[in-house]
Length: 63
Figure 1: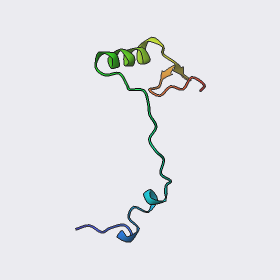
Figure 2 (figure 1 turned 135 degrees about the vertical axis):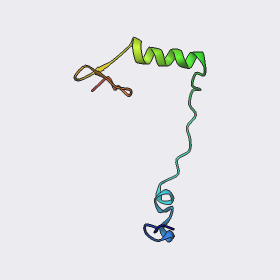
Figure 3 (figure 1 turned 120 degrees about the vertical axis):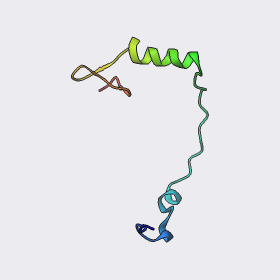
């Protein structure tokens, strides 16, 4: 068996330190055909070109 990095006493330390934030209610995402339509529009119709003429998946318009 391999060695363990650090002692197991510290396992889960960071997760326990982070404050609990309740999940927010969000609009439901489209499924099926409607999702494909949304992806097509995002990728090919209203394309935002990044510097150098590249397209990014997560294209922020202010950049």
